[in-house]
Length: 132
Image (tube, rainbow, N blue to C red; front, side):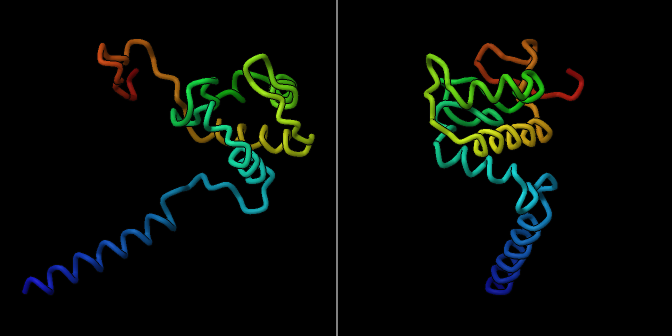
């Protein structure tokens, strides 16, 4: 009896894992899309060591989840291409810079990381409610 229960639990878990993997992410980057190349440039240059996306990553630079909604393409291009006092000039070719901008634009469409000041608790955690 125990063996049957364990086997059915394992089978259920495996089926559920496959279903989540295949159907859960509705905002996948289309294969061959320029945004996918931007993501690869982001990873290759270890941008997440300084910047956050969806609140995850380093703290040296700003969270870039919604930067494409706040800054125009020319501004993003200049910062990524030439760097700043704190951000290094990575010597990226124009194609890579434009790909990163496309990826940041895609990320902007998929979520938000701005939390209202009223949602932040004294412990540093925050409450996410749709009403806020």
